[in-house]
Image 1 (cartoon, rainbow, N blue to C red):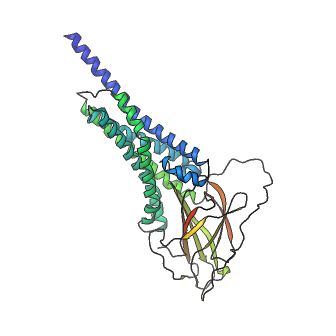
Image 2: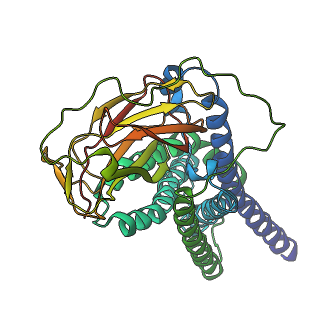
Image 3: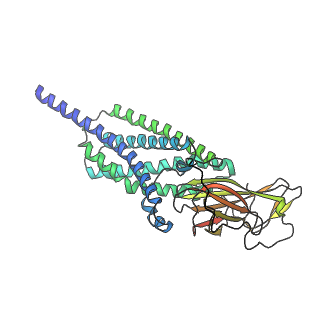
Length: 389
């Protein structure tokens, strides 16, 4: 009798150990899937033409925010750590619930539920990362951030869902293979406390992730990561530089500001997963009111000084989703208007580009440098000058 009880006790202990291995393996494999997917995304983004990248991009999704690529320290490390801890704790909570609290004796059912758990966690983590940027957006531009949600959040969530669908089966299969047969009598109270603790830990890590993405987005408007210094050398002379004035001029109209009355500058930038954004500001520095109308004049130059020629189309909605009409914008002394440039990431390869900008085509262009991924033929949309709320 004692021998039978001892054997049953050993069997129960073995099942408990195997179950712990299963749920821990699920979380670890999920974290490794995040890292592997981003490494594959980066490796393929740096190879081939933009056309090839656009063709394969949907099949190499990543849930790592773009700010982890080019913002200054400590933001990339903070984003990575907070995101991986959030994924790890969340997946651990899912696996404890599926494998210990509500286990199914059918392996394929457990695998499908765990696969779906990876999709849900991936989308949730991407949403948390977007939350920090959305908060900064609404503070900076006002409104409810509807345009941000459409332009940045929805594509990021869809990419996270693709990541879960393409990579989520791996931790699911690993967990089911290592978890064995579910214990018939799990210690419900202890397991439930463990699950709640993992959920709380995931919530804390998610809060840190939202704070990190907000801080990274805020710092990206003023400073970006610079490459390692190298020995100075004379750069080759550009063979195809952009002109200092656009070849065609916008028609004049009564009340238009003179070139000396207004100055143009970059007001901010953002880069969510797959989407890029650049804001421009025109400010009246004169002592009298004057008008601006239409699209600003933009051009780009590579680090070597050669012209980059994307395809820029008019955009009819502002950053908060409001329709922009054709009417001129009146700038009081000291007043300003803005314009938004939005585009899909063509390659994911950032470099320090020169942005040439003017109040309108035909005005003298001023320059600024930004870490951007702009390529010849890339599709971009640009709003006319408008007054933000």
